[in-house]
Length: 479
Image (cartoon, rainbow, N blue to C red; front, side, top):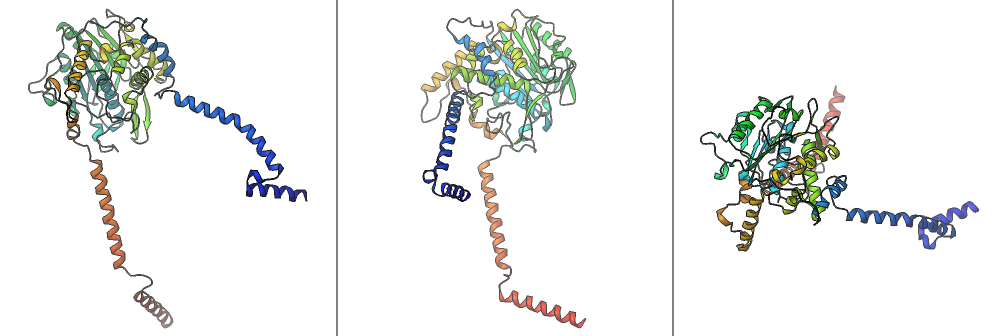
């Protein structure tokens, strides 16, 4: 009888609910409710704290940003001193071909967009990409390239490429440094080549495959460390720079700076002699490693610093195509972020560069130390150029009529021509319509075929089946 009573109590508890159950079910429910109340409250408070925390690429960056950059936003902090240059020019090279070198293109484009957010225009950036990865037949997203998932923004958006494919050679790179362009060698859109003089800060960024004192161009030729040293020496004699920041992201990268002997050249390499430079992560949608660790940590840390100091996610963290426009919050971070912290200290401490990989750097030839130079001296437009951009934007805003921007000083915007210039870009909507139309046609053809066919319940089918069975029966008996 006791066993029957217990079974009956559980049956009533399941059937009528806890409120109508016997005392056994009620007491057990009260104990469970008392035990579960506190964990639920703790869980909800943790969720609220997580929702209030800013969205960062790497949560480990938060403490470093609050210790290194945030104090420099205080009124009583000592600002970094800008250089005496009047213009900035960048030369970005991705020298690798083939689909499996996808990450080298995203390295270059990540630095490219960081410069654009710093206010640099395409007139002062020379971009050299050895392979057209976005248009590769194995690319599942034709005409696009991503460094962090397909929702993080297309890196090919608003990109002006100056040298592509087989035009990316050692000779072309050296001619850009020395200003010795071939006759008829013009840029797209009628843009002139950047002017380099004794008041110009020059950023030279190389990414690809390399080794001890060499850097490979398309697996066909090599740029040697003495070639770089010779080019910089000629630039010094021709007064084509004020300061140079030379960055190489490749295996044994710092060996490319071994023979540089001219003044005011900052050298940084993502690995030392005998060390490798590693890829960061693979993307399942793309099917390739999408960026290298060293270049990724530079971009991610600046993004996270912008997020924490401005109170809103940086443009590269949001699913937006507005990655070209000048971002004042990014420039504010760059002005308070010195070269040593940005390019050496943070990648070494937070970059997870790989087994035994260390960042090499040298500033012994320079009048300033790297920890005295703001990142904006090379990764953003100069103060004079930025002031001009702000003034021009104010004029554009005042002349905004009928949802069209009248650009001041006759400067033409290339945003609207982007889709037309991407040769391999596909109209997704038209493609979807064609696919849907093909599916409808296939369904109609299948239905028509089924209508033309013979139903198993039709008289004709039954008669033919019966005749066939009689024929088989008769022939078997006859045989």
